[in-house]
Image 1: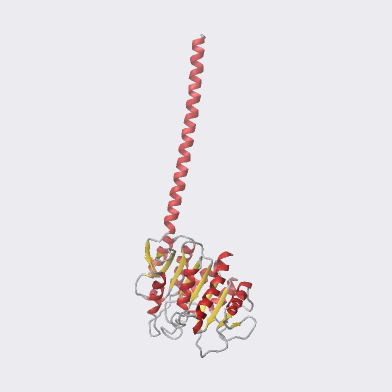
Image 2: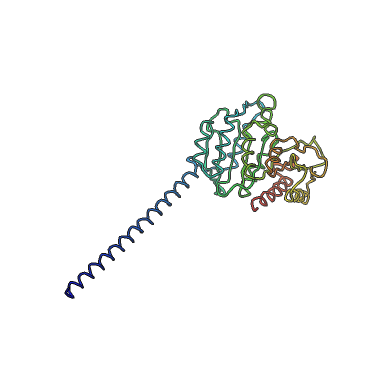
Length: 326
């Protein structure tokens, strides 16, 4: 074989090797691009699923208080049935897991929707579960979840309007403290037949079902109540852990903060107090779920406006902040 033929043979072989290597690199590059494209599509789909279709810019405080303002002791109330409560629980679970679209699908047959709210003043975002019409589900209440962080605590308002200004305290805590959920009853305590709307003592309510889903995830909660001046003049606040007979350190610290702010506090885990909340069904459920539950009763001056109310709100916000930081 001549040197020329040898050179051509080696060149041909070399060209084939280079071509093969190039093809391998091209296929590898295409594979990487496809994987990256798939990841991007998956990420976009995940983000899409986490955002409700409905979005509004609102004054959060006004939105909540406009809803509760309409509640009346003469108003109607019918609790959800067992099947409706199960569907509601699944919808709330989906929302807590970050899948708003699945939550929308589950809640729509109940007359409930999910809306991503942006508070006009603070810019903070919240996901609202609320009735889309005026049917029975409008009486079941609302749920507000901080959409900018995971849920680390809940404030519960079982008796809005009836326990005056507890709804104001609830929305104030939601606005001022990150990582929260606000669970709000949707009927006056005396609405409907008998004690049907007293959701702090009923397990057949949407309110109880939502609180239970939060408790199952270990989310600690504080339930806000108010008592009349005629109930007791010895205390400004009664603090308990519901069915439990002891209190974790952060709850004892809350009692200390309230007292340091000049409020007279009865600690139900170490003294006999009025309004201890021992029969509260959310407190009993928390004990079964091994979740932290705080039952707070406040005198009129410690709710709404005024120095005592500001001090109480600040002290409770300190508790919620400790939960959010855990």
